[in-house]
Image (tube, rainbow, N blue to C red):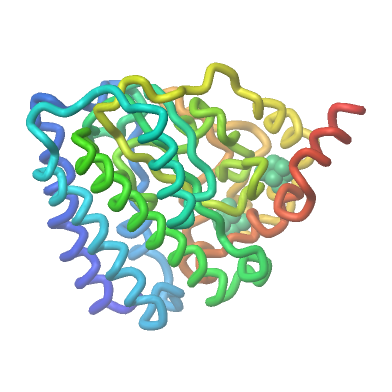
Length: 313
Ligand code: SF4
Ligand code: SF4
């Protein structure tokens, strides 16, 4: 990014961070704990790397829309009812799913999230979470790294941020309290939430893998006062970790050597195979890179076919 773009980005993001962090001063919000992870802020960290950034004028309108919706997440909290409902009916839940699907979120699950998943300095409305996944177009992702692929990644972030805000507005109309999460820089860690919701599993590439879209989707969550969401009680996708152990394709293909054989265990207990500081120069200078998504077998072969063949061995 050039210096001017950096300056604008930092200005826009700075105000947003202050508003976001102020939520942790609200009495009724669920706050981070001493074991919470620190968020890696791609939009800020990215400004430190490279001149030939893909985050230039061609995607500027999308970035601005992302920031607008990130702000809406905070501003719309004032619309929450004073005494919110806590139980949703089957018909209302069906309506919610229908709305999410219609707006493009093809995956929906529910989780009770532990407080330690809330990022340092952040807070969420509740531990009851609706977790949403939004597909990225295969043809476009398969061109990675390219401007077309970067555009698709950002479009997905933007559209999913809008869906999240729409679902929060829908819930408020029904009398529930809601806090939309944004897929780009949420207030809590999404991959373990997706695992708890039983909709996906974290692969070595740092991307969650689902039966519907493999690694080709993005996640967000809506935190809500609804206590009777049908939460998952089993993790049907844990086998993916064993699959990763023998696959390691993303490790071999990653141009930055950012995906490691051995896991990194952060102080917070968060386990990852991705070293962000090695990924970021490629992510920023090579149009969001995304090679690890493109080469993942789950992007190219049906999840259940891979599972069947793997479990046969
Ligand atoms: S985005 Fe690129 S550099 Fe980053 S982990 Fe994936 S393949 Fe490696
Ligand atoms: S490429 Fe292989 S090792 Fe990497 S996330 Fe996909 S399945 Fe796991």
